[in-house]
Length: 255
Image (cartoon, rainbow, N blue to C red; front, side, top):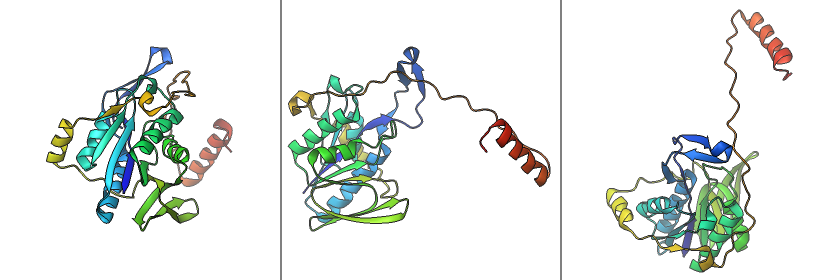
């Protein structure tokens, strides 16, 4: 059995972000990590491998000049191998171009199960995993909080507005992981050292027969509007309620 994990390298959540080039670019502190939800996907792949035995887990990432550190983290956690799609055309590429590249590589490498995080913590789009499933023409279960794989079947739970939904589908299939599915393991020192020394194979879009067409273009960035200062209303309950209603109705005009 082959398990493909789609991973993305993203800025650390504590990295400083600013607007540069007159609103045409972002200036992001160079602190990059494996996307939190993808780390859960790697953990899920390793749990499935442990349960089934004999499975191979490989991680793939797509990006120009970024992605290697995320792949090394996956190796340190226990992935068997990694592949990096590195191409200049991927710089600023939209989710569909990235999905096409990932789908082409996964199809080339072979797969029974595709795992990915529910979304990435930089753009929070949540599009690439389902797009890859669509391009591969396989079922996709999104945002799972419980997962089981046995006898060629995927069993998963996902949280919806109406409660917990239980889903079953046959392999091959794709699954995107939600917070709470598993707690990602902390790699051991030997695993980290081995991952740092590992050669990360690279392929280009041309190698995969993929063209970078149809990407979205960012027109510009703007900082969020400054929030007004917090006002504390003093007085007894009746006075506070009356003043609050006045401000909501006559000043904020929300009621």
